[in-house]
Image 1 (cartoon, rainbow, N blue to C red):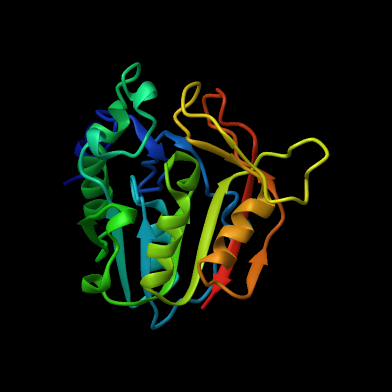
Image 2: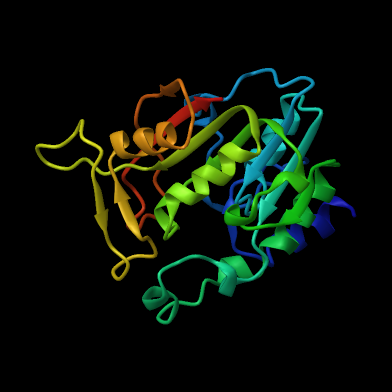
Length: 239
C-alpha cells in the first residue's frame, strides 16, 4: 500500500489512538499518548520480554512495547460493541461506533508499521492459561468501565509472571484523598465506578500484586475535549 492509499484508508475511520504510521501519516486519535509515554512506568527496554496489552483498541501500547524491543506482544480486545462491559443503561442510549471498526483500524496500523503483534479476541475476564504467562501486562483506562474490576485484576494477575501496569481515571474525593474509595455511577457515563487512587492500589494488592509502585497523577485530556479530561493514575504491580 503506497502512502496516498494509506492516508485515504486512515481518513475513513474515527481513531481512538494517535498513531504515527510513518511518511507523515498520523491518525487523528481521541487520545494522543505520544507526549505522555514517560508517565506510564513502562521500562525503556523490554528486550526478551513477552508482553500483553489488554483492551488494545488501535494498538498504541502494543506497538509501543514492540518498539521497545519486546520479543512477543499479544494484543487482546473484545470483538463487538455488544461485548463491552459498559453499563447497560448507557449502551441503550449510545452506539459505541468507535468499537465497531477497531479491528480494521488495528490491522491497518499493523500493516503500515510492519508489526508482528498478535491480536486476539479476548475479554479481560477471559484471560486464562491458554495464553501463557507474560513478563509485562499493560491495561489502560479500563477498570472504570468494568462492572467487576477486581475480577479483571485477578485475571491479569493470573497471566502475569513479572509486572502489570494499570492506568485508570482517578477521582479525588473530598476529605478522603488517601482512602480507598469507590463511587458507583452506572447511568450518567459509560463507567461503573469512580475510583480513588488508593482504591486502585488496594485492589491490585488484594489480588496479589506486591509491591505496587504508584506514579504521579497526570492529565491526558481527549483531543476533542469532553468529560474525559480529569486525572489519571498509573501504577505498576509486581508478582
